[in-house]
Amino acid sequence: MTENIETDVVIVGAGPVGLFAVFELGLYDLECHLIDILDRPGGQCAELYPEKPIYDIPGLPVVSGQELTDNLMEQIRPFSPQFHFNRMVTALKKLDDGRFEVTTDEDEIFRAKVVVVAAGGGSFQPKRPPIPGIEAYEDDSVFYSVRRMEEFRGHDLLIVGGGDSALDWTLNLQPIANSVTLVHRRPQFRASDDSVNKMFALRDEGSLKFEMGQISALHGDDGRLRAATLKDADGEREIECTRLLPFFGLTMKLGPIADWGLNLHENLITVDTEKFETSVPGIFAIGDINWYPGKLKLILSGFHEAALMAQAARTIVKPDERVVFQYTTSSTSLQKKLGVK
Image 1 (cartoon, rainbow, N blue to C red):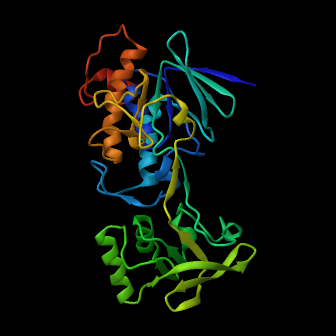
Image 2 (cartoon, rainbow, N blue to C red; image 1 turned 30 degrees about the vertical axis):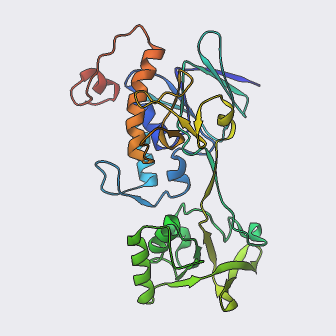
Image 3 (cartoon, rainbow, N blue to C red; image 1 turned 45 degrees about the vertical axis):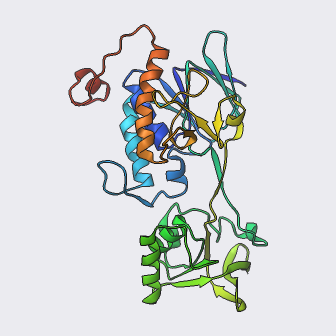
């Protein structure tokens, strides 16, 4: 049965930027419903690196992806946002009364005056390496992300890749693993120099192994990995391992968003830098999903975009109300909304 939901704002994406948008919109008393394809808030932070440290959030010298998500959820709690997880937006259209109608694959219909796209890079899937039979080991011995580090404690880890994710998890998991072997096809990496230098230092002291080559086969029974075949310049040999972590990047897809009639730039949504509004008035795009000259794909940039978007959204939802800019540090009315005593 179709469910009809009326709200002020629909936010597509419940990652950090989408969550902070709830806060900024809530300060203007705008009701928000969030739709996300994942089963929980946090976006890529929660899905791909919940325990990975993040160092560039203002005021937080270090915070994990999950901690940041938890803090944002606590920050927006006074505004009672409504979440709709495990959903994909399948259609969007403009109604005669100026509102937008957003439909999901669960036959929900949302009607709102403002739509905010905060979908990161779109729906994303890890790239599966071309290893025969790898599907049989997935979720038992082969993992494309690290949600809980403890699940890898005491295991013989085989990590494959040459980017930041591969190097970061090599360094972060090495202290708790029984052994760590990093495999990359060449000695040059796409990761930060600091991470590469730390990895080679651990290799030199015998704390981990680095092998050049490619994984060509997996060995084990009932999804339980016991070894992998490494193909290098000298031929093939087996490496003992009980967990495989391949980091070959992500496949980003805009999905149905690409059919909404928005102007795109290299598969990203173009916006202005005053309101972060798209080519369709009333539809905004914030975070990694958008593009404008000078764009930086940083969480803190998305927070800034959310703040400016919220002011513009308020004028659409409540066009007759006069805007009075206030600071949360001094406004008693804002502090009342936040439940500050």
